[in-house]
Every structure is written in structure tokens, then in C-alpha cells.
Image (cartoon, rainbow, N blue to C red):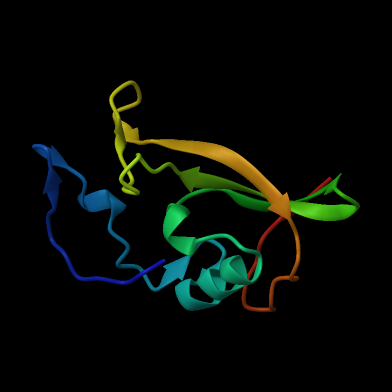
Length: 112
């Protein structure tokens, strides 16, 4: 979840400014705290949309609770890309084992 200052960005003639992260706060807490917690759980924060879904689930993966999150997809060159069917950034839901509990400043819902 990198920070930047851009007023408008186009890729292949499409306005993708909404994909640029300029906020310091997410729905889950401060950007830096959320990004650090994601990294501690082996999730690249640059692959999680600023308004993407993140939750801890009681469902287990190998005996551990898991994190379910929205991930931006990358093409063969390693870049995020536009999905023409949805007219948004290509994304999918993923799960990964919870390795590190969120700090007090990160407010991620726990689902049963």
C-alpha cells in the first residue's frame, strides 16, 4: 500500500487514477500498519486494493485460521492489469494462513 500524489493517470487510454493509493487511512486502519501486518502474513500489500476485502476466517488451513482478501492479479510481465469484462482491475479472492495477529491499530473483522 504505497502512497503517492497523482491527479490523473491513464493506461492504454483508460483512467486508472482510482488504482493509485494516496490515502493514509483504510477501512481497516492506517495504511502503514495494515501494510506491515499484510507483509507479516506473506501478503504483498501492493496486491491488495485500498478498498479491497480483508477478513480473518475461523476456517482453517493446515490447522491455522486464515485471511481471506481481494488480490489484484498480475500479467506475465508482473504488472497489474485491467479486466475488460468488469472494466476494473483484474482481481480474485485468496486465502492464506494467519501467521501474525493484527495489531490494535488494524481492525480486520473476524468471520465465523
